[in-house]
Image (tube, one colour):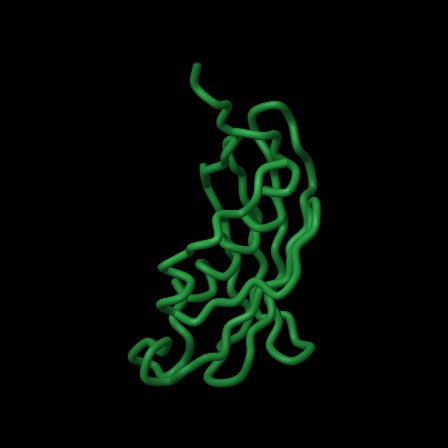
Length: 130
């Protein structure tokens, strides 16, 4: 099993937290700060929600990796349903399929108990060199 890297500067910069993680599952969250996370329309920028989903997917996938393996995002499709002006956004991620070289994951983002976005992503599983 490969551990998720302990240092995640980007997540720390935007205040993104990994609250729970296990093999194939994770829960992440971020508290929306208007002076940091808002777009010009005074709601959370879509990139903040995307980062939450992307990080949640990596956090769910990392515990399934063998020693020395790593993973990288190939692509993520995200659909935004509702804006989020304030509050804590929670991202629940589940691994849907893991092959030898590709994994597919689903993330659902909630503000309170309302679904505000959903993402599906594919990650490459990289084997150690040598």
